[in-house]
Length: 376
Image (cartoon, rainbow, N blue to C red; front, side, top):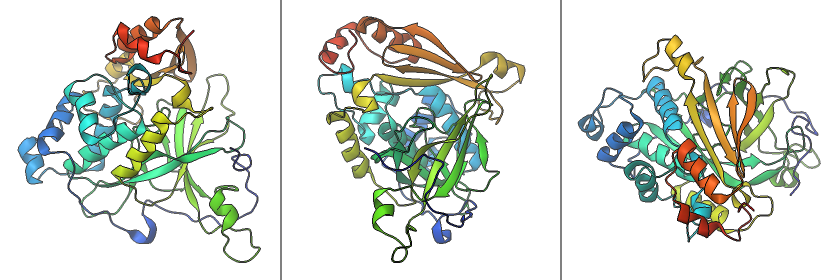
């Protein structure tokens, strides 16, 4: 499906509305109970090896304080602990990704057998943030599926994001997302100011937010501010990424996804996940591939800077292992290296187990037979 012109080219000009970390009309997020218990929240922190100086009683009583620092630590440790992956779609008889709160908790915390994709990863984090006392709500985004440098081609509302106001007595708002392969590594202020650019995986990856009309999107094409004005009524947030290479820093920003500030709920994401898991899509990333991403800290960098396990520094370098189809790549310091090329399903299962920590057995490969994602 084609939607839009080149991602940095818009057919009309609108005055830029600068937003500085505040929701529309200065809205505040309410504190809402979680679908997870204080016991489960304590297990979650323990699973990640993260000590925030609170215990189960603090969580249960609501006396555990929240802050941007603690939110940043939670996001970092989440990404270092859990793989982003879709193996259940291909290596199980039902092929359905279970993104229910109880299903995700069992897989990722209790049994520690693997991770999930955005609906599962962000549903787990969202529930845990609320259990820990954070004021948060969920949103949805349309992913840009177009090629880098090419036209914007948007998906359905197929991505889960989280809005958080971490500081008590403040409506300063951040976007959190642990469910996108090359997405945010830390909370990002909901601001489109030019200097709101944050460090990503390493110094060669940066993220920013812009606010623009979505070019020729369905709503932009159908609704305008006045007759024949050509100006859409809705401006969307866009998360953009800049991936630089060591030998080429003259690259362009790319839109990862676009979103509004509307609230979405668990049943919305469960319905969307069912469609992604079960509906054949000729160009669908998840339908046609085994995908897996895991983040790691550069040990030598970690040691040289004298960082503790719970420290957080914007300059801490990390790297990413990525499997798409039959290749495993290492993204580190502006360079990409193919470290494995897999020829059989048994080789792929072994790589998923050894490199990404996903609990798969050799006999699981029978379930991928005949699917577009199968090797061979």
